[in-house]
Image (cartoon, rainbow over all chains, first blue to last red; front, side, top):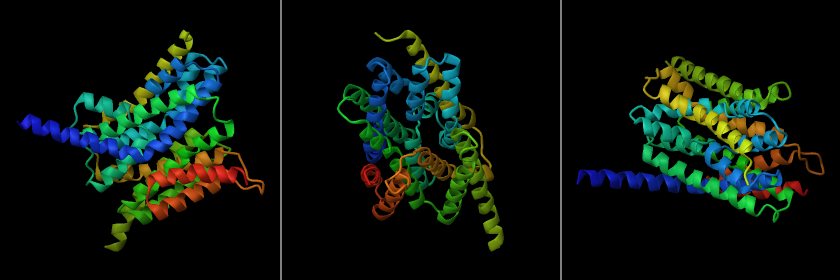
Length: 244
Length: 105
């Protein structure tokens, strides 16, 4: 009986997580379609594109993979480049790890493997709204919906690559920025530190602007995140003392 | 017929990404984070999203006929729509359509 109640609760959380993914699906489909279409145009087969989406499951890394594999780069080069472009996930999953303190190894593995920039944005907003709680089944519903839609959208993009003109693919690809803007705003709307968040945003933007043309974007993103988050933390420490 | 060299490269790239994604969750989950670190982590989402947006806008070189960045104008429009509607879906719609409009201006 209790087991049934637990299962019902888990299912409910799973579906709530899946529903939370719906607002991001338009962007997943737009970017995924463009990613599949560009893969096809770059000479990759449907199987290769589907495998990339299923196992690599990272838009920017997939675009990078196309250009490297197409130019005949060796495996070590590809592995290093993919590790480099995905380095930001170290920070993302370090943040996410705090929600897995009571989770089993399987839950940690699934939760870690399926996280993306987008589901991280949605999940962090949920956690902020729910007293820093992030149930595994909610996250699983969110991540699984995102993963399935990403795979389907890249496959459809590959199959219908010739239908859309290139300029429209670029515009669809840009929806990624729109989604990040929306996720940033969602996170900000539920934040308890809105003014500090604006300062953190400004510092992050400033670091990227000043390092533009001198440092690689992937390093700059990590550097700006560390700098801006450290500044936010220092302001947070300084603020209560100032008020005291 | 899939090229096996490419399939092998896909699997290696996937393994590298999996290690980066799942590693911190495994190694940090049971650690008790001091308050200072939790405060630091609480700013990571805002910082990383702001960084990615700025990097994406800067890497997009397309301009309007008057020389303004299409990506910058479309991002600005997306933020305004997001602030007004508080809807993720409408923000994404705004980004696609504003990019299309500014692209042809």
